Length: 447
Image (tube, rainbow, N blue to C red; front, top):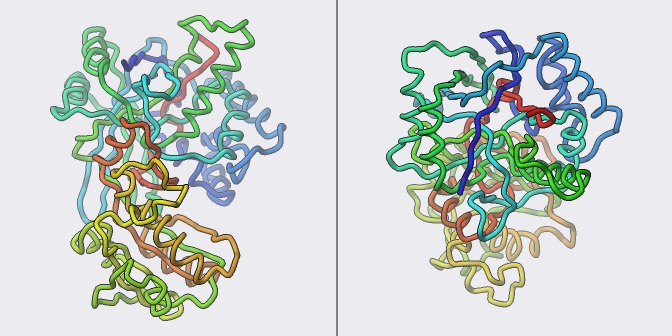
């Protein structure tokens, strides 16, 4: 059972917030942070990104300063808290591959649940420990949710979104912001409203009550909320009052059937390879893979990415930066990982999990072909570009010796595996575009 609650958001009072909000912390570099603060010293990154890169714990002073900055901004009314709690409809308008999309959802608080078979909140992929340490230190210092968890729910009739957005029809947004896409070639418009009507709020809560939530992005943030709640509960003698705000996490909830929701692939580039070539790769693959009689040049990788689904299930692109060309390969078996029954990493994995392209890439292509043939005992190192052209660019820089392009993970697979309690490999999905950080903040030390 999913319990959502309203919040009195802490937010910037300006309607135009382009210079104040930011992309999520985990896609920003030190140069990105400096650029944002140069445009406006009150940009949310001053609080949300105290330590760069946020892949592990930083110095204590950085988090302490972030907490003080948040406190000062609230005291100085740079940020203010809305007087009345509500639900916050949220819309993003963006373009991808020549098509304009409108993705709609809502900011709200969701009652925390520990992961498990009885939970209605499900993670969908594995996480890293370092970012959780960073986020926990920041949450302790700020006592706030600075950016939302991105949650999905099943709603074939789109009742939740229609009910909520009908309540704001013809109302201009109270806040807007335009941020660049991750590749920097386009922009995403974010728009925010608030609904305080008790009848609408009750209807939305009831519609969501018996749903399951699937975490699309923000696994580290959600896990941090669970840890933070346990810490406060321990400090309170093992019992945190049900009304305490730390029992909730800030979410943006979006229906899986929303017409503006798209999932893009996360590709891989690999380092620590010696002598990689397409010819040697195919020879090492033997009967496990077959190559299609087609080649793509370095400047055609985006075209390869678009065409991959048409080549069939599990078709993937392999890029050789030395030859500056890529080929398309497919497994020869419909269940390619079933042929490794003695592989302990695959023990207990369901047939649905074995059908994930990211699982086939890791456990067939990397573990059985690439590492034994080209790594020479070294540990493979990856990077995870989202754009096809990034694969060529990263390989051209010299650190990576091969690129691997994938198809998007289907939403149906996310739902099926989450419900079954199975975690996907890391970087299995890319829900595009990212949510904006800074339009809605949620305090965890006030009721």
